[in-house]
Amino acid sequence: MSTPHNTAAASVATRIVRAVNMPSDTPHVPVVIVGAGACGLTASVRLRDAGIDCVLLERDSMSRGSTALSSGFIPAASTRLQKSLGIDDSIERFAEDIQAKAHGDAAPHLVAAYSTGVAQAIDSLEAHGIGFEVLDGFLYPGHRARRMHALPERTGASLMAQLERTANAVGADVLNEALVRELWMNDDDIVQGVGYQRPDGAMEYLACDVLLLACNGFGGNPDMVSDLLPAMGQALFAGHVGNDGSAIAWGQAMGARLADLGGYQGHGSWVTPQGALMSWAVMMEGGVQINARGQRFHDESQGYSEAAVHVLDQPGGVAFNVFDAPLLELVRTFPDFVEAEGAGAVKEAADVQALAHLIGCDVETLAQTLSAVVPGSTDAFGRSFKRALKGPFYAVKVTGALFHTQGGLDIDADCRVLRTDGTPMPNLLAAGGAARGVSGNAVWGYLSGNGLLSAVGGGWVAAGTAAAQLASA
Image 1 (cartoon, rainbow, N blue to C red):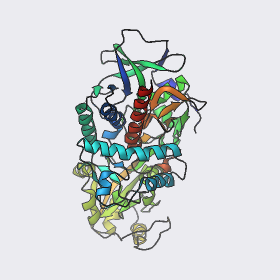
Image 2: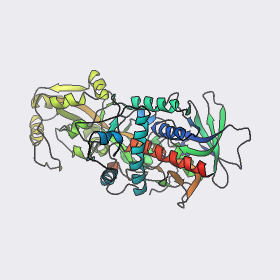
Image 3: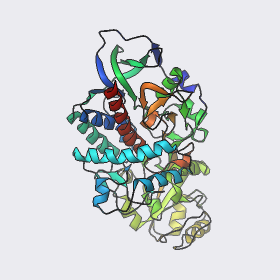
Image 4: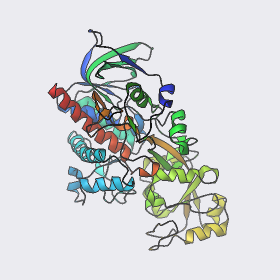
């Protein structure tokens, strides 16, 4: 668990209003959800399926958030779709993979809750008409089975569009351009409702029985990043600007506990200067990263998150993703890469000499580097290769970037926000970017897809908790 810091409260406009009750004429809804990203929308679908009214307050003019900037891949085991394809997997095996990547540092109660909840969420969303497919042909780092669920378009934007369509179809209300500025609570820490700012600056209010914070992390708050994630202090932020740390600031103001603030998702394959994400599938299938000296510098198969730190440590904070024709064919199945290629990011080199000229490195050094890529052997970094790279070669210049944070409000297995003494707040829930995730407290703990696992799995679990609390009231 991380020690609370004060940077969030100092940099984000927040206010906790302590009052016995909100004014009697305040509109009321059973559940208010702050944030209409993947977490909030998933929660709203489960709530509406249970016949519970909810309103999602979204700060932007349309529902996008961090998910729209991702590839939209959701890891889940034992879903109906996975079983129908005959994939040998289980929730227990998935949970083991999450913990293995985090070196046992991921919160066990959330690993269990989210790995179970995300499968239920996927099955439910599929039943509502979202056409998932399980990615084939390669495995992402740390996953022992094919369990990445995605839409055919393979973009987070398409996933968000489908989630919003589904939420609207079941009757969830999404109020855009509603920036939450106030949380109303009584002296017993019971949330009464929220105050949100409209585009003209006017404040409006909404009372509720349960509040779910499904809003944001702090990757877009430079002061917090410099304080809590010094390795990313000068890194490009490739996430959503709404990740300003407001959920953490609210938590500090109301006496909530924080956890895993050192956890985050970096990415070592942000195309520069074009500004696009290049899929790590190329690395997993035999591609390598080479620095300006013509040398490899880490085991690329360990994961793209920690690769961000490795790349930023190289001369100029850049590297070149180097691959060959079969891998070019693979990566062209990803829309982001196609866009980057169209913008001129992909350079072709007929042979090692031409590749060295492209990179600006010594030919002999580069030749030695590529000659070490030998199938069936383990190199000095501990990586084993399936195949050698053969010319013509292709290279893409990349840097390391911060995508989103994985720490936040501490929560129990039901997504109830915990006070500093470990007791749960009566009716305040958190999930997704607002809460601690399942990546532990360091960059290397991020298993591919953990962000959407926490968003979709966490949204599903939180909605179940809200429904149970309303039923028992």
